[in-house]
Amino acid sequence: MKKLLFLLSTLLLASCEDVLKEAPKSLAVETFYNTLAEVQAAVNAIYTPLRDSNTSGMGVYIAVLEGHTDYGLGRGSYAILNNFAGLDNVNVSRVSGAWSAFYLSIRNANLVIKNAPNGKAISQADIAKSIAEAKFLRAFSYFHLVRNWGGVPIRTEANMADITAKRNSVDEVYALILSDLQVAETSLPDQVTDIGRPTKWAAKTMLADVYLQLGKYAEARDKADEVIKTNKYALVQVATVDDFLKIFGPDVITTSEEIFSLKFSHQPGQGNLFPTLTNHPGTKLLGGGGGVFGLYSDSTLPTYSNWDNADLRKMLWYSWNIGVGTTSLLSKKYIDPNSLEFAGAANDVSWYRYADLLLIYAEAASQAANGPTTAAMEALNQVHRRAYGKPSGTPSSVDFKLADYGSAAAFLNLLVKERGYEFQYEGKRWLELKRTGKAAEIILAAKGKTIVQKHYLWPVPVSEVSYNTAIDPVKDQNPGY
Image (cartoon, rainbow, N blue to C red; front, side, top):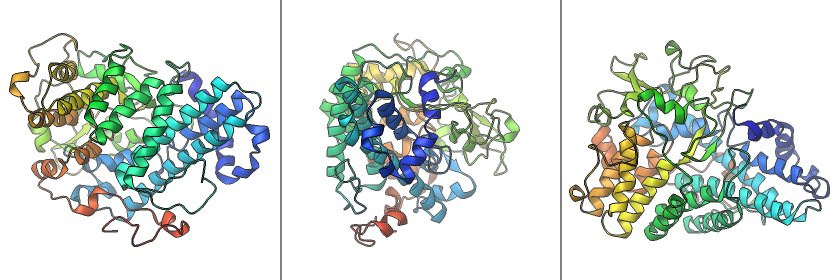
Protein backbone atom coordinates (compact mmCIF):
# COMPACT_ATOMS: atom_id res chain seq x y z
CA MET A 1 0.00 0.00 0.00
CA LYS A 2 3.10 2.23 -0.13
CA LYS A 3 2.48 5.77 -1.37
CA LEU A 4 -1.10 4.65 -1.73
CA LEU A 5 -3.41 6.85 -3.79
CA PHE A 6 -0.81 8.90 -5.62
CA LEU A 7 1.18 5.95 -6.91
CA LEU A 8 -1.96 4.07 -7.84
CA SER A 9 -3.00 7.04 -9.92
CA THR A 10 0.38 7.36 -11.59
CA LEU A 11 0.33 3.70 -12.55
CA LEU A 12 -2.57 4.58 -14.80
CA LEU A 13 -0.55 7.22 -16.61
CA ALA A 14 1.71 5.16 -18.86
CA SER A 15 -0.67 5.23 -21.82
CA CYS A 16 -1.49 8.90 -21.19
CA GLU A 17 2.21 9.80 -21.04
CA ASP A 18 2.85 7.99 -24.34
CA VAL A 19 0.12 10.04 -25.96
CA LEU A 20 1.47 13.27 -24.53
CA LYS A 21 4.91 12.54 -25.92
CA GLU A 22 3.94 11.08 -29.27
CA ALA A 23 0.83 12.91 -30.40
CA PRO A 24 -0.11 15.82 -28.14
CA LYS A 25 -2.52 17.31 -30.69
CA SER A 26 -4.62 14.14 -30.54
CA LEU A 27 -5.69 15.12 -27.02
CA ALA A 28 -8.56 17.41 -27.95
CA VAL A 29 -9.11 20.06 -25.30
CA GLU A 30 -12.86 19.64 -25.57
CA THR A 31 -12.72 15.93 -24.72
CA PHE A 32 -9.80 15.55 -22.32
CA TYR A 33 -9.57 18.53 -19.94
CA ASN A 34 -13.22 18.73 -18.94
CA THR A 35 -13.37 16.87 -15.63
CA LEU A 36 -11.28 16.90 -12.49
CA ALA A 37 -10.20 13.31 -13.15
CA GLU A 38 -8.98 14.21 -16.63
CA VAL A 39 -7.11 17.31 -15.48
CA GLN A 40 -5.61 15.35 -12.58
CA ALA A 41 -4.39 12.67 -14.99
CA ALA A 42 -2.64 15.39 -16.96
CA VAL A 43 -1.11 16.77 -13.75
CA ASN A 44 0.12 13.30 -12.83
CA ALA A 45 1.92 13.11 -16.18
CA ILE A 46 4.15 15.99 -15.04
CA TYR A 47 5.73 13.66 -12.47
CA THR A 48 6.37 10.80 -14.88
CA PRO A 49 9.63 12.07 -16.48
CA LEU A 50 11.00 13.00 -13.05
CA ARG A 51 10.30 9.53 -11.70
CA ASP A 52 11.67 7.69 -14.73
CA SER A 53 13.72 4.69 -13.57
CA ASN A 54 15.85 4.75 -16.73
CA THR A 55 18.85 6.90 -17.64
CA SER A 56 16.80 10.08 -18.08
CA GLY A 57 15.36 10.07 -14.56
CA MET A 58 16.39 11.37 -11.18
CA GLY A 59 18.59 8.41 -10.28
CA VAL A 60 21.29 9.10 -12.85
CA TYR A 61 20.91 12.88 -12.45
CA ILE A 62 21.61 12.59 -8.71
CA ALA A 63 24.46 10.16 -9.39
CA VAL A 64 26.23 12.67 -11.63
CA LEU A 65 25.80 15.38 -8.98
CA GLU A 66 27.09 13.06 -6.27
CA GLY A 67 30.02 11.90 -8.38
CA HIS A 68 31.90 15.13 -7.76
CA THR A 69 31.55 16.05 -4.11
CA ASP A 70 34.08 16.25 -1.30
CA TYR A 71 32.91 12.96 0.25
CA GLY A 72 31.95 10.97 -2.87
CA LEU A 73 33.89 8.99 -5.47
CA GLY A 74 32.80 7.42 -8.72
CA ARG A 75 33.69 4.02 -10.12
CA GLY A 76 33.69 2.98 -13.77
CA SER A 77 32.13 5.59 -16.03
CA TYR A 78 31.44 7.81 -13.00
CA ALA A 79 35.14 7.96 -12.07
CA ILE A 80 35.85 10.74 -14.58
CA LEU A 81 33.66 13.11 -12.56
CA ASN A 82 36.22 13.10 -9.78
CA ASN A 83 38.73 14.84 -12.07
CA PHE A 84 36.66 18.05 -11.99
CA ALA A 85 37.81 18.74 -15.55
CA GLY A 86 34.45 18.70 -17.34
CA LEU A 87 32.18 15.91 -18.51
CA ASP A 88 33.18 13.15 -20.92
CA ASN A 89 30.82 11.89 -23.64
CA VAL A 90 29.20 9.28 -21.41
CA ASN A 91 28.30 11.80 -18.73
CA VAL A 92 27.34 14.43 -21.30
CA SER A 93 24.79 11.88 -22.49
CA ARG A 94 23.60 11.34 -18.93
CA VAL A 95 23.00 15.00 -18.19
CA SER A 96 21.38 15.42 -21.61
CA GLY A 97 18.87 12.80 -20.45
CA ALA A 98 18.18 14.89 -17.35
CA TRP A 99 17.69 17.99 -19.54
CA SER A 100 15.14 16.07 -21.61
CA ALA A 101 13.34 14.80 -18.51
CA PHE A 102 13.06 18.28 -17.03
CA TYR A 103 11.77 19.74 -20.29
CA LEU A 104 9.28 16.93 -20.80
CA SER A 105 7.99 17.59 -17.30
CA ILE A 106 7.81 21.31 -18.14
CA ARG A 107 5.95 20.54 -21.35
CA ASN A 108 3.38 18.44 -19.51
CA ALA A 109 2.98 21.21 -16.94
CA ASN A 110 2.39 23.70 -19.75
CA LEU A 111 -0.40 21.50 -21.13
CA VAL A 112 -2.21 21.70 -17.80
CA ILE A 113 -1.66 25.44 -17.37
CA LYS A 114 -2.91 26.13 -20.88
CA ASN A 115 -5.89 23.78 -21.04
CA ALA A 116 -7.27 23.33 -17.52
CA PRO A 117 -8.98 26.78 -17.43
CA ASN A 118 -11.21 25.69 -20.32
CA GLY A 119 -12.69 22.65 -18.56
CA LYS A 120 -16.46 22.60 -18.56
CA ALA A 121 -17.06 20.08 -15.76
CA ILE A 122 -14.47 21.11 -13.20
CA SER A 123 -14.76 23.74 -10.47
CA GLN A 124 -12.73 26.93 -10.49
CA ALA A 125 -11.15 25.87 -7.19
CA ASP A 126 -9.95 22.59 -8.68
CA ILE A 127 -8.67 24.41 -11.77
CA ALA A 128 -6.68 26.81 -9.58
CA LYS A 129 -5.25 23.96 -7.49
CA SER A 130 -4.26 21.95 -10.58
CA ILE A 131 -2.56 24.94 -12.20
CA ALA A 132 -0.75 25.70 -8.94
CA GLU A 133 0.59 22.12 -8.78
CA ALA A 134 1.70 22.37 -12.41
CA LYS A 135 3.48 25.66 -11.73
CA PHE A 136 5.18 24.25 -8.64
CA LEU A 137 6.55 21.37 -10.69
CA ARG A 138 7.51 23.65 -13.57
CA ALA A 139 9.45 25.84 -11.13
CA PHE A 140 11.07 22.71 -9.69
CA SER A 141 12.40 21.70 -13.11
CA TYR A 142 13.58 25.17 -14.06
CA PHE A 143 15.34 25.53 -10.68
CA HIS A 144 17.40 22.43 -11.44
CA LEU A 145 18.03 23.48 -15.03
CA VAL A 146 19.27 26.98 -14.21
CA ARG A 147 21.67 25.82 -11.51
CA ASN A 148 23.28 23.20 -13.73
CA TRP A 149 23.18 24.86 -17.16
CA GLY A 150 22.84 28.58 -16.40
CA GLY A 151 20.41 30.44 -18.65
CA VAL A 152 18.15 28.05 -20.57
CA PRO A 153 15.29 28.40 -23.08
CA ILE A 154 12.05 29.34 -21.37
CA ARG A 155 9.13 27.31 -22.65
CA THR A 156 5.74 28.11 -21.16
CA GLU A 157 2.13 27.62 -22.21
CA ALA A 158 2.57 30.70 -24.41
CA ASN A 159 5.26 29.27 -26.71
CA MET A 160 5.14 25.52 -26.09
CA ALA A 161 4.18 24.80 -29.70
CA ASP A 162 7.30 26.52 -31.06
CA ILE A 163 10.40 24.46 -31.72
CA THR A 164 12.58 27.55 -31.55
CA ALA A 165 13.17 29.29 -28.24
CA LYS A 166 16.12 31.53 -27.48
CA ARG A 167 18.44 30.88 -24.57
CA ASN A 168 17.08 33.14 -21.86
CA SER A 169 19.21 34.79 -19.21
CA VAL A 170 19.63 33.41 -15.70
CA ASP A 171 17.65 36.37 -14.35
CA GLU A 172 14.76 35.67 -16.72
CA VAL A 173 14.62 32.02 -15.65
CA TYR A 174 14.57 32.98 -11.98
CA ALA A 175 11.83 35.52 -12.62
CA LEU A 176 9.64 32.71 -14.00
CA ILE A 177 10.53 30.41 -11.09
CA LEU A 178 9.56 33.06 -8.55
CA SER A 179 6.34 33.88 -10.39
CA ASP A 180 5.32 30.22 -10.53
CA LEU A 181 6.10 29.61 -6.86
CA GLN A 182 4.18 32.69 -5.78
CA VAL A 183 1.11 31.25 -7.51
CA ALA A 184 1.79 27.86 -5.95
CA GLU A 185 2.10 29.17 -2.38
CA THR A 186 -1.23 30.95 -2.76
CA SER A 187 -3.30 28.28 -4.50
CA LEU A 188 -1.90 24.94 -3.36
CA PRO A 189 -3.77 23.33 -0.44
CA ASP A 190 -2.68 23.52 3.17
CA GLN A 191 -2.48 19.73 3.18
CA VAL A 192 -3.11 17.00 0.62
CA THR A 193 -4.93 13.69 0.66
CA ASP A 194 -2.57 12.10 -1.90
CA ILE A 195 0.85 11.69 -0.30
CA GLY A 196 3.55 12.98 -2.62
CA ARG A 197 1.77 16.05 -3.91
CA PRO A 198 3.05 19.50 -2.93
CA THR A 199 1.33 21.76 -0.43
CA LYS A 200 1.59 25.53 -0.12
CA TRP A 201 4.24 24.86 2.54
CA ALA A 202 6.35 22.96 0.02
CA ALA A 203 6.04 25.95 -2.31
CA LYS A 204 7.12 28.32 0.45
CA THR A 205 10.07 26.06 1.27
CA MET A 206 11.22 26.05 -2.34
CA LEU A 207 10.75 29.82 -2.44
CA ALA A 208 13.05 30.12 0.59
CA ASP A 209 15.61 27.96 -1.21
CA VAL A 210 15.39 30.06 -4.37
CA TYR A 211 15.75 33.29 -2.38
CA LEU A 212 18.82 31.82 -0.67
CA GLN A 213 20.27 30.93 -4.06
CA LEU A 214 19.71 34.52 -5.22
CA GLY A 215 21.28 36.01 -2.10
CA LYS A 216 17.98 37.50 -0.96
CA TYR A 217 18.65 36.55 2.62
CA ALA A 218 15.91 38.46 4.43
CA GLU A 219 13.29 37.02 2.06
CA ALA A 220 14.72 33.51 2.46
CA ARG A 221 14.77 33.86 6.26
CA ASP A 222 11.19 35.12 6.46
CA LYS A 223 9.79 32.54 4.07
CA ALA A 224 11.51 29.68 5.89
CA ASP A 225 10.38 31.06 9.25
CA GLU A 226 6.81 31.22 7.98
CA VAL A 227 6.88 27.46 7.42
CA ILE A 228 8.72 26.69 10.67
CA LYS A 229 6.17 28.62 12.71
CA THR A 230 3.29 26.49 11.43
CA ASN A 231 4.64 23.59 13.53
CA LYS A 232 3.50 21.25 10.77
CA TYR A 233 6.91 19.57 10.52
CA ALA A 234 9.37 18.03 12.95
CA LEU A 235 12.65 16.13 12.72
CA VAL A 236 12.31 12.37 13.01
CA GLN A 237 14.17 11.38 16.16
CA VAL A 238 16.81 8.64 16.00
CA ALA A 239 18.65 6.67 18.68
CA THR A 240 20.74 4.34 16.51
CA VAL A 241 22.04 4.39 12.97
CA ASP A 242 19.33 1.92 11.95
CA ASP A 243 16.69 4.47 12.89
CA PHE A 244 17.55 6.44 9.75
CA LEU A 245 15.44 3.83 7.95
CA LYS A 246 12.48 5.71 9.44
CA ILE A 247 13.48 8.61 7.16
CA PHE A 248 15.09 6.99 4.10
CA GLY A 249 13.90 3.38 4.21
CA PRO A 250 11.89 1.69 1.45
CA ASP A 251 8.83 1.17 3.64
CA VAL A 252 8.43 4.83 4.54
CA ILE A 253 5.13 6.27 3.36
CA THR A 254 5.65 9.74 4.79
CA THR A 255 7.19 11.30 7.91
CA SER A 256 6.85 14.36 10.09
CA GLU A 257 10.01 15.60 8.36
CA GLU A 258 8.88 15.26 4.75
CA ILE A 259 8.01 18.49 2.94
CA PHE A 260 8.30 17.35 -0.67
CA SER A 261 9.55 14.06 -2.08
CA LEU A 262 9.31 12.12 -5.30
CA LYS A 263 7.62 8.83 -4.46
CA PHE A 264 8.69 5.33 -5.51
CA SER A 265 7.40 1.83 -4.82
CA HIS A 266 7.89 -1.86 -5.63
CA GLN A 267 5.34 -1.69 -8.42
CA PRO A 268 6.80 -2.56 -11.87
CA GLY A 269 8.34 0.53 -13.45
CA GLN A 270 7.78 2.58 -10.28
CA GLY A 271 11.16 2.00 -8.64
CA ASN A 272 14.06 4.29 -7.81
CA LEU A 273 17.30 3.76 -9.75
CA PHE A 274 19.65 5.62 -7.40
CA PRO A 275 20.06 2.88 -4.74
CA THR A 276 21.20 0.58 -7.55
CA LEU A 277 24.20 2.88 -8.00
CA THR A 278 25.24 2.90 -4.32
CA ASN A 279 24.94 -0.76 -3.32
CA HIS A 280 27.01 -3.91 -3.91
CA PRO A 281 25.51 -7.36 -4.63
CA GLY A 282 27.62 -8.96 -1.92
CA THR A 283 26.00 -6.96 0.87
CA LYS A 284 22.49 -8.27 0.18
CA LEU A 285 21.20 -4.82 1.13
CA LEU A 286 19.48 -4.40 -2.24
CA GLY A 287 17.37 -6.93 -4.07
CA GLY A 288 16.79 -7.10 -7.81
CA GLY A 289 20.43 -7.69 -8.70
CA GLY A 290 22.09 -6.07 -5.74
CA GLY A 291 23.48 -2.88 -7.25
CA VAL A 292 26.37 -1.81 -9.46
CA PHE A 293 28.28 0.26 -6.81
CA GLY A 294 29.07 3.13 -9.18
CA LEU A 295 29.32 5.54 -6.24
CA TYR A 296 31.34 5.00 -3.08
CA SER A 297 33.64 6.78 -0.63
CA ASP A 298 36.97 6.10 1.06
CA SER A 299 38.01 6.21 4.70
CA THR A 300 41.15 8.19 3.81
CA LEU A 301 39.17 11.18 2.53
CA PRO A 302 39.40 14.08 5.02
CA THR A 303 35.64 14.53 5.03
CA TYR A 304 35.32 11.05 6.52
CA SER A 305 38.52 10.79 8.59
CA ASN A 306 37.89 14.15 10.31
CA TRP A 307 34.25 13.34 11.07
CA ASP A 308 33.30 12.70 14.69
CA ASN A 309 32.78 8.96 15.18
CA ALA A 310 29.88 9.66 17.56
CA ASP A 311 27.84 11.20 14.76
CA LEU A 312 25.26 8.59 13.74
CA ARG A 313 25.30 9.88 10.17
CA LYS A 314 28.91 8.73 9.81
CA MET A 315 27.81 5.21 10.75
CA LEU A 316 25.75 5.04 7.56
CA TRP A 317 29.09 4.41 5.83
CA TYR A 318 30.61 0.93 6.19
CA SER A 319 33.74 -0.76 4.94
CA TRP A 320 33.40 -2.93 1.84
CA ASN A 321 36.06 -3.85 -0.68
CA ILE A 322 34.64 -3.11 -4.11
CA GLY A 323 37.89 -3.89 -5.89
CA VAL A 324 39.49 -0.45 -5.74
CA GLY A 325 41.28 -0.84 -2.40
CA THR A 326 40.72 -1.97 1.16
CA THR A 327 39.71 1.49 2.40
CA SER A 328 36.59 1.84 0.23
CA LEU A 329 33.26 2.61 1.87
CA LEU A 330 29.66 2.09 0.84
CA SER A 331 26.58 3.80 2.22
CA LYS A 332 23.46 2.17 3.65
CA LYS A 333 21.44 5.36 3.56
CA TYR A 334 19.29 3.89 0.77
CA ILE A 335 18.84 0.15 1.03
CA ASP A 336 15.97 -2.10 -0.04
CA PRO A 337 16.54 -5.86 0.33
CA ASN A 338 13.05 -6.46 -1.06
CA SER A 339 13.61 -4.62 -4.33
CA LEU A 340 12.28 -6.95 -7.00
CA GLU A 341 14.04 -5.63 -10.09
CA PHE A 342 16.96 -3.56 -11.31
CA ALA A 343 16.15 0.09 -10.59
CA GLY A 344 13.28 -1.16 -8.46
CA ALA A 345 14.02 0.23 -5.00
CA ALA A 346 11.10 1.80 -3.13
CA ASN A 347 13.16 4.50 -1.37
CA ASP A 348 11.78 7.98 -2.04
CA VAL A 349 13.85 10.89 -3.34
CA SER A 350 13.64 13.59 -0.70
CA TRP A 351 14.03 17.09 -2.12
CA TYR A 352 12.81 19.07 0.85
CA ARG A 353 12.61 17.85 4.41
CA TYR A 354 12.51 19.74 7.68
CA ALA A 355 16.28 19.53 8.04
CA ASP A 356 16.61 21.48 4.76
CA LEU A 357 14.20 24.11 6.01
CA LEU A 358 16.04 24.58 9.33
CA LEU A 359 19.41 24.98 7.64
CA ILE A 360 18.02 27.32 4.98
CA TYR A 361 16.66 29.45 7.81
CA ALA A 362 19.92 29.29 9.75
CA GLU A 363 22.04 30.49 6.85
CA ALA A 364 19.59 33.16 5.68
CA ALA A 365 19.09 34.55 9.18
CA SER A 366 22.83 34.79 9.79
CA GLN A 367 23.57 36.37 6.42
CA ALA A 368 20.73 38.88 6.79
CA ALA A 369 21.98 39.91 10.24
CA ASN A 370 25.68 39.92 9.26
CA GLY A 371 26.29 37.28 11.88
CA PRO A 372 24.57 34.29 13.48
CA THR A 373 21.55 34.94 15.64
CA THR A 374 20.39 32.86 18.59
CA ALA A 375 17.53 31.52 16.44
CA ALA A 376 19.90 30.64 13.59
CA MET A 377 22.18 28.68 15.91
CA GLU A 378 19.21 26.90 17.46
CA ALA A 379 17.98 25.83 14.02
CA LEU A 380 21.40 24.36 13.22
CA ASN A 381 21.67 22.70 16.63
CA GLN A 382 18.33 20.95 16.18
CA VAL A 383 19.73 19.10 13.17
CA HIS A 384 23.07 18.51 14.91
CA ARG A 385 21.47 17.07 18.07
CA ARG A 386 19.37 14.64 16.08
CA ALA A 387 22.53 13.40 14.34
CA TYR A 388 23.91 12.34 17.74
CA GLY A 389 20.72 10.59 18.78
CA LYS A 390 19.69 13.36 21.16
CA PRO A 391 16.25 15.06 21.35
CA SER A 392 16.39 17.77 18.72
CA GLY A 393 14.47 20.34 20.74
CA THR A 394 16.48 20.14 23.96
CA PRO A 395 19.88 21.79 24.55
CA SER A 396 22.63 19.19 24.80
CA SER A 397 26.34 18.64 25.27
CA VAL A 398 26.91 18.48 21.49
CA ASP A 399 25.49 21.96 20.83
CA PHE A 400 27.54 24.52 18.94
CA LYS A 401 28.04 27.72 20.95
CA LEU A 402 27.12 31.08 19.45
CA ALA A 403 30.21 32.72 20.97
CA ASP A 404 32.48 30.37 18.99
CA TYR A 405 31.06 31.47 15.61
CA GLY A 406 30.68 35.22 15.91
CA SER A 407 30.84 36.18 12.22
CA ALA A 408 28.65 35.37 9.26
CA ALA A 409 31.68 33.84 7.51
CA ALA A 410 32.53 31.53 10.41
CA PHE A 411 28.93 30.43 10.79
CA LEU A 412 28.61 29.78 7.06
CA ASN A 413 31.70 27.55 7.15
CA LEU A 414 30.11 25.59 9.98
CA LEU A 415 26.82 25.30 8.10
CA VAL A 416 28.53 24.11 4.93
CA LYS A 417 30.33 21.40 6.90
CA GLU A 418 27.12 20.28 8.61
CA ARG A 419 25.21 20.23 5.33
CA GLY A 420 27.94 18.01 3.94
CA TYR A 421 27.16 15.47 6.65
CA GLU A 422 23.37 15.78 6.64
CA PHE A 423 22.57 15.61 2.93
CA GLN A 424 24.99 13.02 1.58
CA TYR A 425 23.62 11.22 -1.49
CA GLU A 426 20.63 13.59 -1.74
CA GLY A 427 21.90 15.46 -4.81
CA LYS A 428 22.40 18.75 -2.95
CA ARG A 429 26.10 19.05 -2.11
CA TRP A 430 27.56 20.09 -5.48
CA LEU A 431 24.83 22.69 -5.99
CA GLU A 432 25.48 24.06 -2.51
CA LEU A 433 29.25 24.26 -2.99
CA LYS A 434 28.70 26.25 -6.16
CA ARG A 435 26.09 28.51 -4.56
CA THR A 436 28.27 29.41 -1.61
CA GLY A 437 31.37 29.93 -3.75
CA LYS A 438 33.22 27.30 -1.71
CA ALA A 439 33.55 24.55 -4.31
CA ALA A 440 37.14 25.30 -5.32
CA GLU A 441 38.38 25.63 -1.74
CA ILE A 442 36.63 22.55 -0.38
CA ILE A 443 37.39 20.22 -3.28
CA LEU A 444 41.06 21.23 -3.25
CA ALA A 445 41.30 20.58 0.49
CA ALA A 446 39.36 17.29 0.35
CA LYS A 447 40.73 15.79 -2.85
CA GLY A 448 43.65 17.90 -3.99
CA LYS A 449 41.84 18.66 -7.25
CA THR A 450 41.53 22.03 -8.98
CA ILE A 451 38.14 22.56 -10.60
CA VAL A 452 38.41 23.78 -14.16
CA GLN A 453 35.95 26.50 -15.13
CA LYS A 454 34.02 24.36 -17.63
CA HIS A 455 33.11 21.92 -14.87
CA TYR A 456 30.75 24.37 -13.18
CA LEU A 457 28.12 24.25 -15.95
CA TRP A 458 26.96 21.36 -18.08
CA PRO A 459 26.81 21.54 -21.89
CA VAL A 460 23.59 22.41 -23.69
CA PRO A 461 22.61 19.07 -25.29
CA VAL A 462 23.19 18.35 -28.95
CA SER A 463 19.48 17.58 -29.29
CA GLU A 464 18.64 21.17 -28.31
CA VAL A 465 21.32 22.74 -30.49
CA SER A 466 20.40 20.60 -33.50
CA TYR A 467 16.66 21.25 -33.54
CA ASN A 468 16.30 24.66 -31.94
CA THR A 469 17.49 27.13 -34.57
CA ALA A 470 17.28 29.98 -32.08
CA ILE A 471 20.28 28.46 -30.27
CA ASP A 472 23.67 29.30 -31.75
CA PRO A 473 25.85 26.16 -31.40
CA VAL A 474 28.89 28.31 -30.57
CA LYS A 475 27.69 31.50 -28.90
CA ASP A 476 24.96 29.80 -26.85
CA GLN A 477 27.02 26.80 -25.73
CA ASN A 478 28.52 26.79 -22.25
CA PRO A 479 32.29 27.47 -22.13
CA GLY A 480 34.54 24.52 -22.85
CA TYR A 481 32.05 22.39 -24.78
